[in-house]
Image (cartoon, rainbow, N blue to C red):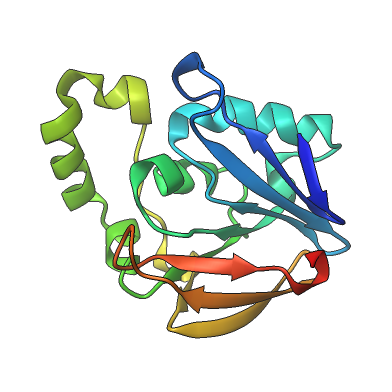
Length: 169
């Protein structure tokens, strides 16, 4: 766990047994826990361990903030929601359909990763539409008791957003 500011940390997800490939942000405060880009389903054990280290469980997660829906950032969101079904998933409007129905993502990734799909990404489950908070070009949210500014920042992905935590400046 690496502290960034009050209530804001990040931790390595040990993707495919390696350090330094994928990390997730942890927002924690008076109103619960949020994760920024929880990664693929294969990293769920690392999420559980890191939360336990901080005195939390996956049941404490109230928000999942997605910068974009690529599998290394958001692929495990549907599976994670099985352990925190009350969590709100924040995602840009262009990514919603792929969370609700990940079949096109899975088909595309299968072309690249073939027989390694399960090993790398694990189960890629749909995210219930009822859990999704749709983001537009700009916005604001309160996560774990902190104000969060949201900006549409296309580039790496056409549906990319960035989250800014003013309290951490």
